[in-house]
Image 1 (cartoon, rainbow, N blue to C red):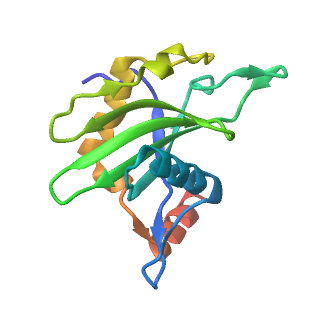
Image 2: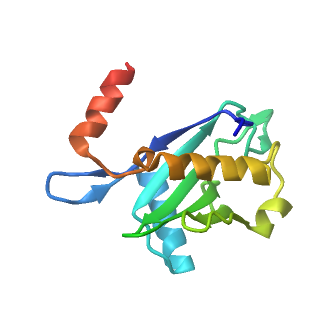
Length: 155
């Protein structure tokens, strides 16, 4: 499959020595709020960064907003569920969801109606989900020490 979009995925969840799972405050608050409102559980959280900085952003005050595109998911014993969201800071927009077992990506109509400078196509959304399904370790909860080592490796 030819890559049509350039992106990277930043895992946001880590596990402390005591077993507590934690992540950055803003994405965690957003994910917790969405999970509570939509009545689902999650144990995977990641940020998707795009080479094209206009994706899922709005023009504002001569520049673009800093909205996060987040993957909120749940790893089950026999399946992986992923959802894609735009976190605008004061709310969010659901983009799509997909189970690994059937790989049927369901795009959410409200995303199509929301104005962004550049939006993801259905094919690009599928590409992101398929990448994670093929590389589930990219969103697996890391031990806090592993996360520290990864960050130091990038320096």
